[in-house]
Image 1 (tube, rainbow, N blue to C red):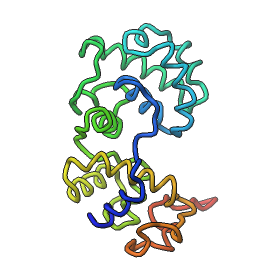
Image 2 (spheres, rainbow, N blue to C red; image 1 turned 90 degrees about the vertical axis):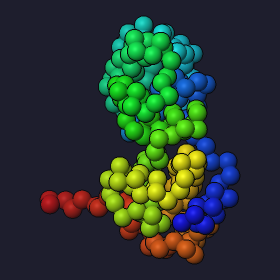
Image 3 (cartoon, rainbow, N blue to C red; image 1 turned 90 degrees about the horizontal axis):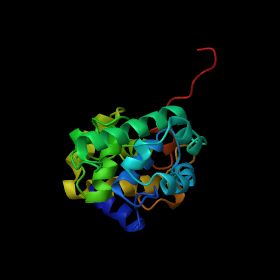
Image 4 (cartoon, rainbow, N blue to C red; image 1 turned 120 degrees about the horizontal axis):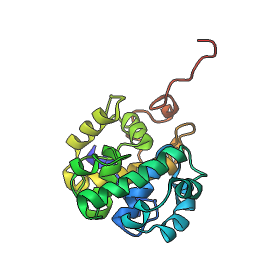
Length: 218
């Protein structure tokens, strides 16, 4: 596995978080917004959002209708707006407006799960307490044979055992880059994949790591 990962890492030396942000707080906000939305879509709304509410105190003082309008192009924008304002208020009440550096404190905030917490911990401080498992990481872990599980938490545990902690953040970014650029869900480009010669799913990858197609009337 480590040799395969090294080859993927060499193929994507610039792999990084693609959510635009200027502070830990802004990354936390952007990651919450990315649920059921693309990074491209999030990056379209955050410049104006952060220009108006760049930190926890300013966003905590915002009204829900204002925030809803600012993020209205994203899915579940009403629910996300409520979570962002509540999260900002709790940051002020519990952490002096600063983003905490411990996973258990982060996941206690509205809209923050393990994935979001580890994005912030890894990107901002290179101190993740797990591997970020989004749809790309889940799909690739299964296709590469690194996990046989379907649940993100189980996949995360498998990946954490395969590499040392200092590689966890890089692992997620590399797999996400590979998933977005080469190993797509519907049309994996196995013919130009840098690890197709060692991938157990090569040239049949579209059958692995995807939700089964619903049969109408079933």
